[in-house]
Image (cartoon, rainbow, N blue to C red; front, side, top):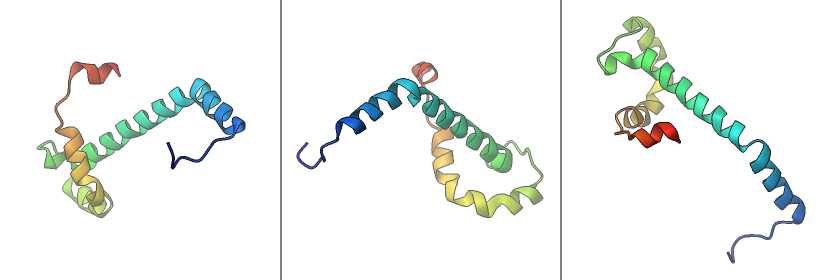
Length: 88
């Protein structure tokens, strides 16, 4: 707590209003973006999982843009899930 700078009342009220009004919307938008990115990666690189969706020509054209995200995408796809993940 010693390194945190003190927030003014205006910033505190702004944080509370953000939490009450738009935090749920921001979280839902981020979750939607995550699902869209998963879908894009699955469509372009589905042959890595054994399910070719696009012809390899188009996958190879998009490969340089997808390479930085392949490792984290594989970790997210192959992660074990619990039924509580769907709830929250």
